[in-house]
Length: 367
Image (cartoon, rainbow, N blue to C red; front, top):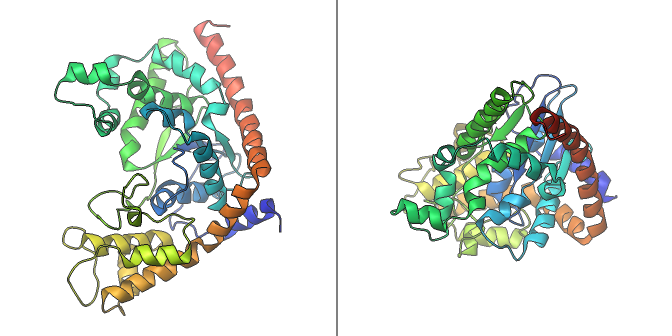
């Protein structure tokens, strides 16, 4: 079976989330994900799973535009593995069931209209708006900047990191997107995007940019297996803390076996405050099986100890990601096919972006 046919089959068989968002006809859905390389289950449950479900929503005339945010990736410094990470991320999207025939899949940097619109919007955005954003501050602190001295903090923060909310707005608006699936942590940036769109329309006395609506994804916040007080992250020094969709059954079993639980024996129950480790495993099961927490706990009623719980989680994860792992490996061996998908996605994205940027130039007097 060819890779293209296998991808279409995967798109039909990967389990959907339980609640579909209703989309009006002729909507335009847009979202990007950072190219951190191979996806872990937090990436899958936090974004890709929802993208796939949205792309299969019955909504005549609706377009789905999903991509790799490689321009955003360099706002936190030089990324030596960026090229490899970009292709690993695209292979991950395809392996998880996104169908390139149903969605536009592309690299952000391959559509230069993003950067052009970014500049036009930057010229309309105040420093006060940017300074009120919280995510760039937390990222700057992660890079070692000291927030106690505000002036020094700003002096040392890279301009790209400060301005990336405007680039996010440009990403969304260049396609005149109507709906954006986001998690809780991105809601502030979507509010910023709406403000930027409204400001542009008001400044130039136009209604060119639609005000995008939030599609709050039913994302599960997946925590570290070894320290379930923080998010699962590829950058964690303890690689047992993170499960990738490409992990072998043996590796998955090893990581789950070493996962932090607690000393409470007997029937499992969900309580993130008193049982963070056990609750994290339940949360993972809930997301992967697309069942509620209550239903997941009910399914675990036979479990009497941590070993049984971990064996159950292992079996579910191995079964869930078997096909994705195999398809991912095939995709990474076929660079020409990956490039073909990226080039086709770029051309389709640019067809939309070029038309819109031409109209923007006319509105502001650049053409």
